[in-house]
Image 1 (spheres, rainbow, N blue to C red):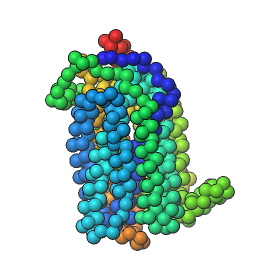
Image 2 (cartoon, one colour):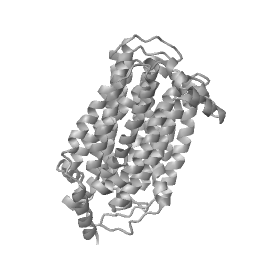
Image 3 (cartoon, rainbow, N blue to C red):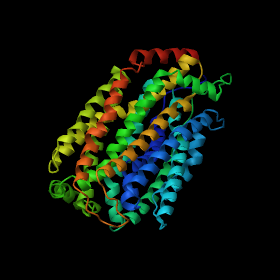
Image 4 (spheres, rainbow, N blue to C red):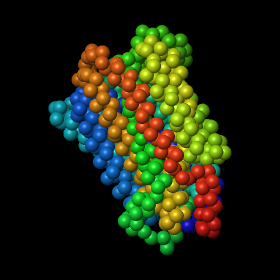
Length: 481
């Protein structure tokens, strides 16, 4: 391997992190609003929405990601292997993200076709941009401490995107559309598309690829796949990623239904009124248009702010105790606060907010570690097989991410359908049966906790602990000389 100095400037770390901020403007919108958009804004039936989210998502996960990973590893250009993908997908992804949340006035069959096509294109472009972007972190530097630093800064940026989408987006949609969510979401997505495109271009121009495979290293796609199937840490990380994103999609997509159908709106309005008044006093008026949307946003805000503290603590803990052990403990504690939601009645708003904040803190510790561990798995593969295939390894993350997102998102609309949820035509208001409240309570608690629990068990079988991290880093550094 050829490499130059692996110390990175803060300028490059921030430039790199903006790419994930851009990606998460799309990704967090999919997690939080896709099922809700299809059923309550675009007017699709619960079953049809579930099928689109699941089938398209799984096809994208297992077809697009391995293909993009293999092609990216074999890309040769004056800009490197991965940066060209970020450059050439920036504008198309912005355009398609806007189209996917647009509501043309088609027949019902036309709506299904339009949703299927736009969602498929969006996931294809997301894979073509975000998989090379993720792999880029594995070739910016081979220094694992620097990778921990990159991951921490990167996921602060991710939290900013998540904060906007989960806190401000629904109230802004209500405000921008003057109560018409279809109009509001198109206005918001237009701005997000423009901002995200600019951020991806900044990532391209501010980063460098330092770890370059030597010309002697050659491998076929068949060899890459064989290496993966023999790589136990990669298999564990693939399954773990699927499980984590099932929970994120299931929990994140359920909260909007939870606030609309379970939480006591009167008590919620009373509890958040001092905050709303404070925001209005400084000119933030869109939070007052709907107390349920405002409560939903502030609930997410508490969790995300605490996540930022967890992310800030993550690097120090990982450097001291190793990524695997810190990940497992923090994930287990965060799961406890998910399970607690099964005990809350509709009026216990403060307890809901408190549990969300504590869950956010402990889950925040795990966020940078998941991606840094994938980079470690790429090093493990090179260390074991004497061949580096960074992008195909990172495709594990993207396969897991999209599979988890698809399964979790489909579960949201499928499960609420099982509990009798009635989808609304665009602009229509319906009264839901009482069983829906019980269903969404289970979705944000017991159902959401199950994948996390299985993930904690899997981490016991992940062999790259702190001792092995140091051994791999030292051996590879010696080889690369």
